[in-house]
Image (cartoon, rainbow, N blue to C red):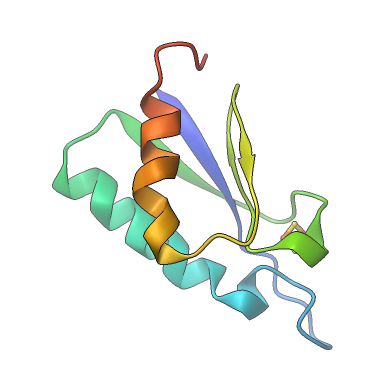
Length: 87
Ligand code: FES
């Protein structure tokens, strides 16, 4: 099954983490959209994708990485994950 990784790292200081910018809510919304469409995708909540200043970050395994993700971006990320060329 194809996987979308969502960084849910929360840092104590400042706002330099994906969770500090709302990634947990984004992960929940992503899972809800996938479930509502019964898509063969899974969400993997990951501790850090290494580009913290660009978060919230998501990565389609075998495909693209997405930065500064907002809820409006989720359909495009799902479409990218469903691309036949993504492993
Ligand atoms: S905190 Fe999300 S990429 Fe590091």
